[in-house]
Image (tube, rainbow, N blue to C red; front, side, top):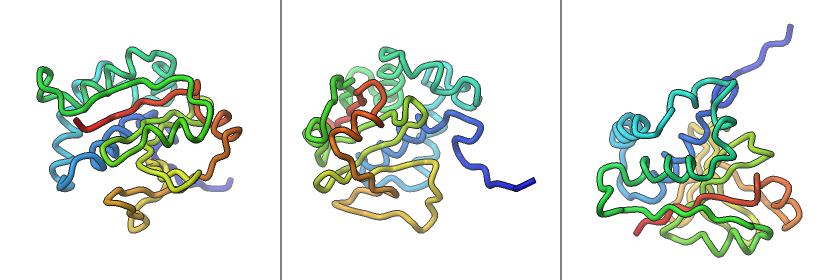
Length: 180
């Protein structure tokens, strides 16, 4: 029997959670590993049913079609300490049909949490160059492979045409996180 290496996503749906923490890491400056770890531990518990993301038969599949749940999960993760004075604006952006629709929502204060490949995997989109998107992907081996552009960390570049975007972006939507 051929052996394989398992990775985040092999048995869990934690890619959504990693997309959130990668978004936070790219929007807030000066977060050390220790601060991010503390934030991860505190804020995950604020997300309803966060344990479900660790089970391969549930994970995000249980919630991929629930826009209210997804936006509420982001709201709780990003604005946990200050529900009255929000630090981040959370928006579900729908009807994303072309590369330009994605580009117009990305700037130095925003990241996009996107569900790709028919709801199979969540990533954090941190920037673009033309039709090449800079992505934080928790399934890829990262150690020492990170790249940086305009103070943003990413580990994957995905080049997309309008037609390809419509194929890979689940439900033609993403969640925009903006630092206010």
